Length: 591
Image (cartoon, rainbow, N blue to C red; front, side, top):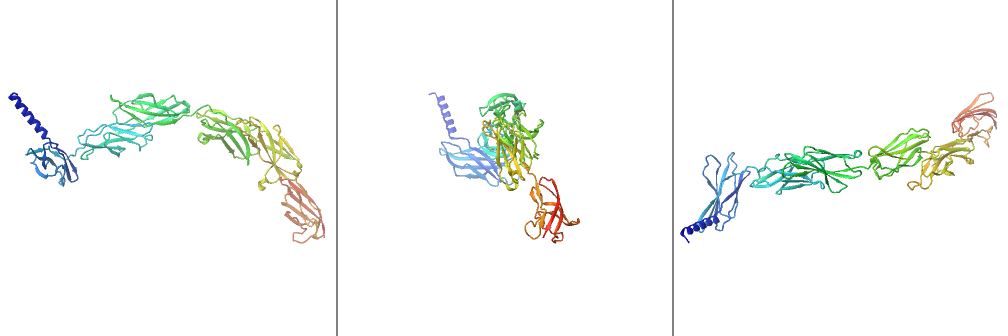
């Protein structure tokens, strides 16, 4: 081998050996910790190292004319990689720089490795840049992602929501499931810490989610979307609008310029559950996007409401009960009850039921509670769709109005015919009370069943004489009704008083035997609140009474028994109908 080649090879081996056995000593960081400085270094790896010690040197930091280093301490324990300089920061304004020397033996020869100088690290890391903040439109949770911070001694990321720290992580993304992105736009920012705990300043890189709202107009079959612009990017290229119908997959329906934040969807299917979300596209060559929250809307069905029907009109306790059937399977905007006098055709609104009052019912009963006034009324019902269009109406129906006359020993009854049911009237049943049923609580008795063509009846029962009789008519529907139920309709209760009669004695026997008390006998006569006066044969008043419920025993106004002889009386009273009755006559007193 030529000599020059041998020398070159030897030099190469020496250089390789030196590099392989001598590495840099690295002083990784000096961190302030209150009054102390914490010094951290990295022990070099070498196959030719016999550790002796670490020597830590320091001096006051003076960039223009530095002082020489002084030995701070020497450490003889390996692998130590940290040391705390106690009270290094107690003198205001003074800073120190440090270096560290590794002393070791290699091949029996003492060697040293010196680090580079470092001062305490007070410089925060570079800002962390958010890539995007996006919302999962199905789960409605927020995903935040950011770019890796390339500061050499960077340590941790900190996620802030509206100025509050919510997460410290070493990851490059975070999922926020605690805030509701369907209620408002949510703002986030990422800051970071280096290995000394220095933190870059807050407020440099805030991003805000796209917040989507909407209004629906079922009558126009349209939805208007409005959203807040995505905040954080320099500019937005476009917004893409996605829609899902009845929980199907989302599909793209349109896009608008990044400067626009509203959209009108004019092709909205009726009676459907519709969901939307909007996706912002960043105006860069690298595809970056951010999705908004999703919104859910329910479109109503229009124009197919049917089977609006009056089940019955009935009088209950002087109130008119209106039973209404409607199609609860359809979306009804409102249901309106109308009323008119039977002899007229001028309907006015009696009651309006809005959709939230109807709920899932299929029948409602409305009680009209003004004064009944013993009149015949007629009613109808209209149903309106969500667009306030009347799309279905019931038949017209009215109450049965019962009236009558008393003719002494008989009562004449007549009523308006019922005209509601599609199957017509099966019968009219006449029910009667023969006493004051309100006071006694007695039950009525069905006295007669008549066919659908009848509207007149004469009650000739002998029990009627002198008594008050109250009646009501109950109409019954023929079988085969629209909804399978046989309906009934009651009329008002109508009372007739029997004729009054009065019987007065013409003699009194004052010996305490029979006929010793003057009593009013008869039917439907008031014996109180009357005027009864007795005169002697010379026309002098001997007594005057206003109550004969217990009779008169033939005494004068001083309580003395009258003398035997002829006397005269004048009686003025009323019957239970309020009619005035005047009676006068003579009465003979016997002893």
